[in-house]
Amino acid sequence: MSSILVVDDDEMSLVVIRNALRKEGHEVQTYDSPQAALAEYEAGRYDLVISDYFMPELNGDDLLERVRRLDGETPFVFLTANTDIKLAIELVKSGADDHIVKPIVAEELVFRVNKNLQERENRRVREEAERERQLLELENQRLVNWRNLYATKDIKQTEQMIDLLGRTVNQSGGYLWLDLLKGDLEEADDEHYKVGKELVQMIVTAAESQKQIFDYITFIGRIDELEMEFEEHDLAQFIKQLDEYMRAELAAISKHDPRRYVPMTPKQRPSGVISVSEQYFLKVVRELLINAVKYSLPGTRIITSFDTVASDGDTRLEITVRNVPRPLQAKDSEGRQVVGVPYEYCELVFDLFYTIEAFPTYFEGEDWSDGTGLYLARKLIAKHGGWMQAANAVNYTGDSPETFTKFTVTVPYKQRSS
Image (cartoon, rainbow, N blue to C red):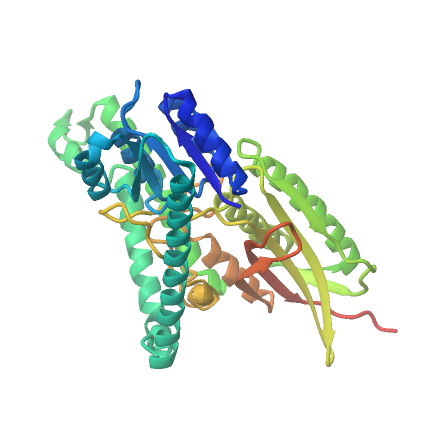
C-alpha cells in the first residue's frame, strides 16, 4: 500500500481519483487547496504526488518546485488537458515524472500511478545495489589504507586543535583591542597613560575570554598528566546513584528540547567494588547525554543500560547511552542529499577521528564545547583503565526496524573477596 497526495481545485476530479486509487489499496489524501496540500506534504511522508496545473493560490509548477526543494525523489504526476500536451512536456523536463490527461479515465490513472511507483521502487533497489557494490569494491580493493590513517591521526588532532584555538580567539574579537590601544594612548605624565573607559572594558572582556580559551587548551594538552582522585564505591550502589544522576541531568539538559529517559538496569543486584574519580566520571556521563540530545529528535527516547561482564577473571561494567539519530539534512550545491560516512564504517571512523569536530554543534551549558567533548571523555575513561566505543545498530523489536546510535563506556571493577 502506498501513500498518495492529490491536489486539484476540481472536486469531481478528486472524487474520481480518490475512489479509483483506494480500490487499488492505496492510501489517498485529497486537497482542493495547493497551500494546504503543501503543508500536509511538509508534515508527512508520501510515496507519490498528483497535482493539477492551473489552480488558485499556487500553480502546479510552483508546487512542483517547492516539493522538489523538500524531496527530489518522490514521483510527481501532473493532470493536464488534451490541449496542454506541450505544457506537459515542459513540466516533465522541469522535474515532473509523468502527466495524465483529463478527463480522467480510472484505468489509465491506476496504470500511470502504479507505473511511477514501480519505477521509484526499481530506482531505490538500483541505488541500494550500487551502494552495496561501492562498499564491496571499497573493501575488496582496500582503497582506504587504515594504517596510514592511524599514522596521521596525531597530526590531524594537532591541526584540528590549532584550528579550534584560532576560531575561538577570533570569536572573542581576536587582538583588535591591541591595535586600538596603540592608537588611543595619551600620555598623562612621565609614568602614566590615559586610556578611554570603553577601550579598557574591551581589553578586560577580551582578556577574560582568551584566558578561558588558553586555560581550556592547557587542560586538553595536559590531560594525560592530569591528577585524579579515585574512590572505591559499592558497585550496585554506584549504578543506582549513576542512574539517578543521569535521569536528573537528562531532564535538565533537555528541558527546552524534551527527551524520554528509559533506563535498563541489571535484573540481578551486581556485586563488586568500582574505583572511579567521581568528579570526572560524571562529566563523561554528562557529555554522552549531551551528545545524545544534540544528535536526536525532540521527544525521542534516550536509553541507558548498565551491564556487568565477567570472563576469565576480567570483570567490567558497561554503561551505554543510546539514541535515535537525526536524519541527514546536508545538501550539496545542486540540492542533492550528501552521503556521509558509510554506515558500516561508522565505528572505525569514530575510533580514528573521535577528536575535534571541524564544524561543531554548540549546546547551551556544555562544559566541553567546540567538538572536544568526546575527545576528552575518551581520554578520561582511559585514565580509569577503560575505553569508549561508538556503534550503529538496528532495533527490530518495534513495528518497523529502527536504526540507533550508541556510545558504550567500559570500566573495570573488582569482585568482592569471598
